[in-house]
View 1 (tube, one colour):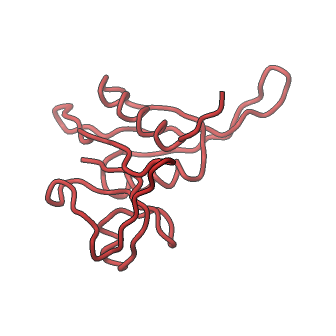
View 2: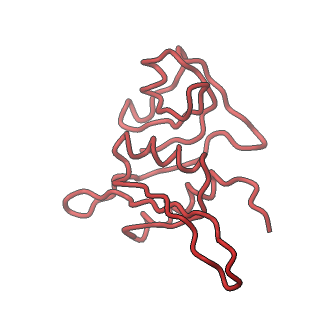
View 3: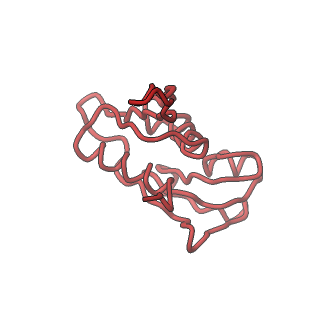
Amino acid sequence: MTMTDPIADLLTRVRNAVSIDRTRVTMPHSRVKEAVAEVLKREGFIADAKVTEGEKGRKGAALGKTLTIFPKYGPSGERVINIIERVSSPGCRVYTPARRMPKVMGGMGILVVTTSKGMLSDRECRQQKLGGEIIARVW
């Protein structure tokens, strides 16, 4: 079965891992997933994200790379990510210019936006005056 929305898969895996207080979540790698993870890391929502080379399968064929995300928790174990949801989907794309970029929870959360200069947070988009497709909302 092929996956139709790998970004939604990443967000769901992170949401599920945080809900059961997991220290790491592993998934198949893609450059888009890695870029989303880098935005979450820059904005302080995850502790780290690592890409590892695939191991050899049963018949010696190399398996694909994996992306491991390490969710972040507060000093008392409180969750840093409370809500992580998909905004733009393959069936309904959501675009916005920089001047109309919405704020999430009054600036407490972020939007993950794909722009002509790569994957950025809403704050970075406002600084660089770039609009784009809103991928996800996190707070």
